[in-house]
Image 1 (tube, rainbow, N blue to C red):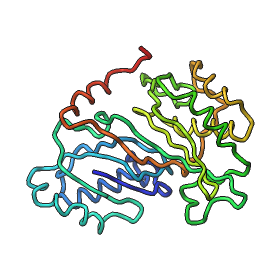
Image 2 (image 1 turned 90 degrees about the vertical axis):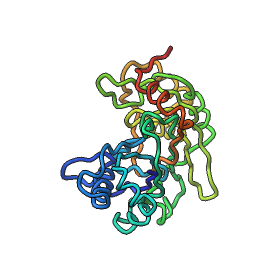
Image 3 (image 1 turned 45 degrees about the vertical axis):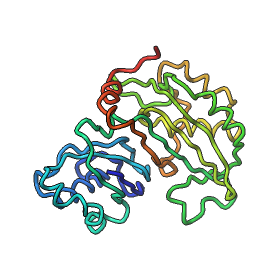
Image 4 (image 1 turned 60 degrees about the vertical axis):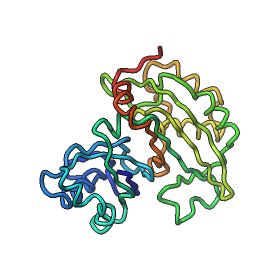
Length: 265
């Protein structure tokens, strides 16, 4: 399933008792469509935090074969009438049992929007654009970002979880400025640990306004714990825009490799 949502009024992706979440809302309507017991195993490519958006999220479920034959072709249209306006099912299709939305993924790509325009964010984009009160130097930010690309331990930029690796391969990290004075960061990696993208963005904002040197973020890669002076950027500027997968024949192998604990070797 290709899923898009405005994360403003959600407490993140993962279902939580008493809270409105994307998974909770989506699962409720999927069960209404396929019936009790007709849906199992809702799994997502990236568990976004509260307030984070997605235009290219991917998830998978298991449904009974009879239910899919009856409803698969009309699933998108039916859910358009059931889901609230801030979450949409864009597309749905059958995949081999070896597919795993999370572990079969090759990479995730995020974009972060921040503006240093004197008037702040465009009112029509205020829910997905951070308004920054001081000028930002996109050249300095690109210089600092380029130094982080590659295989590193990003523990300084992650909220550490017990037994979870913080080693990631950052494939792309760069910034561009559009004609409306909006700076857009593009960040792509094989995977991200919690708060990693927003921490990277927060570090680059500090560089862009001159509070930190262009070498400071890369110097933090030598840290052995989260850096307390890295500010996590607000969630509403962040959008998961793409998840990439290998060919169908490689789903299982990719999932096996992803589940293995990462190291710098």
